[in-house]
Structures are given as structure tokens and as C-alpha cells.
Image (cartoon, rainbow, N blue to C red; front, side, top):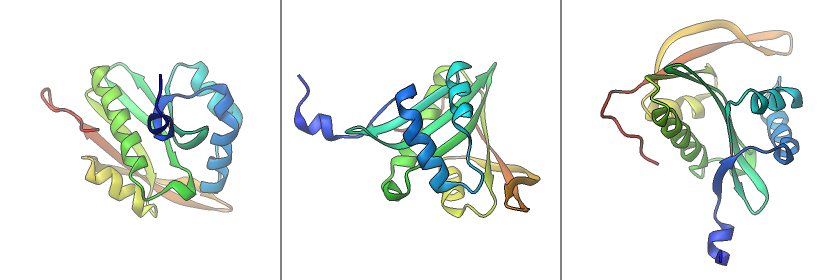
Length: 162
């Protein structure tokens, strides 16, 4: 039997079709050029690691990571605006890193907007380092913004904290 306290805690799980509406709403509230619903459906269908952090039916964070061979790529990690600055984004990132380690991945890559300082801080404080720039990667209306390419490499005995 699940206690009331356990029920009210946010928990990590696989993304389901029933989450798509909330995920798309968070995406639209966060990004100037949000992913479409079909993009999330495709990621689940392709077998990517699609995860949500949910509390009492409310999706607080979602993330998508592709793994191919010994490389992982975090494609999307987003926190519901009213749930930011609570450590839930870090919790999701650590979960993804644990999934990558379990899959014997050697490196995890991602792109982040150059202007997204909170996300940059999160990634850098989690061991990611900048290895390049994708010029004009993100559209913002008629303008474009650079993406910083980050990588987190694992050593053979390195563990990820959650």
C-alpha cells in the first residue's frame, strides 16, 4: 500500500501517450520554436529514453535521450515554468546520466542555447564541458541563435549521483 506521503512525492517514469498534452504545453510555454506533438510521439515510437517527473498527475519535467552504440544524445530536457529552481531539472539530468551509464555509454552530448544561462550552469555543474558551437542552430522568429555543444564523458569507474 502506498502512503499519502509517497503518493505526493514527484517520481520518475517513462513517458506515456497520456503525458503528451502536458509535455506539449510545457514545451510551448518554454521555447520560441517548440517541438510538435508528432515529435514526441516519434521519440517514444523510436524507443528513445523518454522520461517524465510527475507529481499527482502533473508532469513537472520531461526529457528525451537517444542512445546509439556507446554515445547518448540528450535531445530535450525541460522543466515546467512554475516548477523551476527546485532541483527537479538536476534530478532528471542525473537520471538520464544513470541510464546512459547503465547502457555503457562513453559520452553524453547535448546542445543548449548560448543565452540559456540556467541550463548551462546545470550542465556544467554536472560535468559537461563545451566542445563547440553550432552557429544559428535555434530559430527565434526571423533571427537565429547559436547552440553550444556540450559533452559529458565517463571514466570507467565514475558513478552518477542522484
